[in-house]
Structures are given as C-alpha cells and as structure tokens.
Length: 477
Image (cartoon, rainbow, N blue to C red):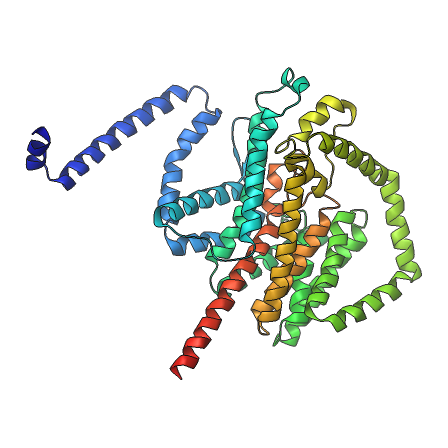
C-alpha cells in the first residue's frame, strides 16, 4: 500500500532522480569529512588516493569516449619516454606517469567490457598472455601460503606493497599489449605511433652524442635495440621509400650502432640484442639476404679489429666480475627454485629469501628467465616460453600474409624486435623489470617491447578487415 502511494506521488524516474541527488550530496559531505580527518598527514597513501578520486573521475569521464581512448593510446610513447614526472605514494616507491596511465586505461577498459559485453580482438596471443597474467596473480597468495617459516619472524608488513606493485608491473605490461592490439585500428594510427617512437629515439640519440639538454627523456633499456629494429626494418623492408629517407635512416642506424656498440661496448645487454635484431629482421624479410649477411658477419668476425674488440669486451666483463658473478647468482637462484618450483616465491618474492639466506650477496639475477622461474615457478616459465613461441609464429604468419607495404614492414619490425628482446632477457631484465633492479620507474621503457608486441594484434585485425572488404567487392562485381 505504501509503495503504491509513493509511486502515485513520485513517478519512477523522479524518485530515482531524488535518491541519486541525496546520495551524491551525502557522498560529497562524507568525502570532505574523511579528507579533513586525514589531512594531518598529507603524505599518507590514503590521503593521496582520496584526493586523487575527483581527478580520476574526471579522467574516467574524459577517456570513456572511444576516440579519446585511442588518442590516449597513440600518445603513450610520449608519456612513457618523455614525461619524467612520478607520483608519490607515501609508502616509498613513486609511480611513473606511464604506469598510472596504463593502470587507469586498463581499469576503464575492463569496466567497459564488463558493462557492454565486449570481447578481446581474436589473436593467438590472447590465451598465453591471459594465462601468464593468471599465474602471476596466483603466485602472490601461493607464495604467502607456502612461505618458509623462518621468514615469518622477519617479515616486513610493507613488503606486501612491494609485491603488489611488482605484480601490477607484470599485469600492466600484458595489458599494454592488449590495449594497443584492441584499439589501434588503422594503418595511419600505427604509422603515427611508430613515428613518435622514432622522434623520441632520435632526440635521445642526439642528446647522448652531442650532450644536448634532453635530460627529461626517460629512455633506457632496449631503446637502442628498438631504434635499430625500426630504422633497419624500414630501410630493407619498406617499399617505395624515397632515397633521401633511406639515406637519413641509414645515417641514424650508423650513429645508433656506433653509440651502443663502439662507445658503450662494455654494456653487452645494450648492443648484443641490437645485433640480434638485425639478423632476425633480415631472416624474416629474406632468407637469401640472411645468408649473405651471415657470410659477411663471419668474415667480419675474422678481422683483427673485431677480434680485438670482442677480446676487450670479454676482458672488461671478466674484470668487473659480471661473468663469474652472474653464474654464482644463477646457481643460488636454481637452488631456491628447486624448493619453490610450482608457482615460485611470488612477485619480487625471492628478494626476501635472498636477504634471509644469502644476506651477504642478496643481488638480483640480472636474467629475466631466472627471475620468472623464481617469482612464478617452472609453470610460469613454461607459459612464458608459450608467449614467445606464439608471438614469433604469429609474426611469421602475418609477414607471409601481408602484402608489401607498411603493415608487413611493421610486422617484420615487431617480430624481429620481440626476438631480440627475448634474447636480451638472458643479459638483464629489460622486458619484465625486477622490482629491486630496474625498479618500478623502469616500467616506462620496459613496456616498449610489449606495445610493439601489441601491434601484431592490430595488424591481424587490419588484414582480416581488408580481406573481408575484398570479398565484398568481389561479390558486388
């Protein structure tokens, strides 16, 4: 009877409007009271998060549009590599803007898929990426349940924050791949995306060579590898490129190789992946050219200057202790993995075991494969190899299917770059940054490999769309 009386005086829409208005007023009042109570400690994580809610709401409203969402993704290279600012958390680590942007876009995208019933763009990469993300997530509670008893008395309650952030690095790296693959939908967008990387890499190259004031750039890790992959791929694969563009790209390629191979020869993980990228891209483009390059490489390997150069690199690394030191670290890692081989010690978890059992030599492995095995177990490592194989197979398939043009060139660049990035994992953690080595600030440049991997998903979609359009045109004719 009361319900009928209310409905007679207040139509359903008017009643809902009043209820929402009252809830909004009460919510704003409660928000102001809570912020006022926490304002005594402005550096508190809770205060920062609460103050960030209005900005987050505005960002959610702004980027909820499809075109704006695409725009945010296309400027992602600028945010990753040219925005030096970080956001304080009040708990020690500072979050790079690229990390926050990918986290916000992932949240919006997941909410949109749930509310609108959207699905991922079909790709052979989806399943291994999602499985690896699930294993990373499961490894955190698994590591807590099966934690060594000796660690319980020394466990720092703040370490769980470190583990959550380390887990987010892995999940957001995967998300960056899926975001690029699901929202960059035209060749023009992919070209613009690639050009942005080239411009930033060129500025970084000139800044390092001529000491120009480009310190704001957050370019590190595999930047040289990806710059070599882009320039070399465009030179040998892209048809119809005017000769002056090829000359310019060849000059940039030579300057990059001179910087990372000759001047920074000591840093093997900086130049070795770039050399591998050249061979991988040549193999993907032309088997004949690859065998010619192999012969040239073998002849160069026998030349006295090259022999002297490689001998000096080996001597420098041996004197610094990189060779024997890393082997020792890997043995320590293997001993730990044998005790926690199923799902590992959790994100960043082996650092605490090292500090407990190997306090005098508690260093990271400087090897992504060992990092993955220690954090996510043998199962996680096997799934990682699944991702690598699926990416190379998908790239090879797209290269064979794509006609000569930019899409084929980008497929060659992305696949060859991913092969070299995988090889770089043996020398360091430039693909999945270990929290205590590259730190969370390295997310801005380690995610490069992941966004280029995402272009393979976009290329598959574009080729499928072009094939459907051709079939429709043939049907009409």
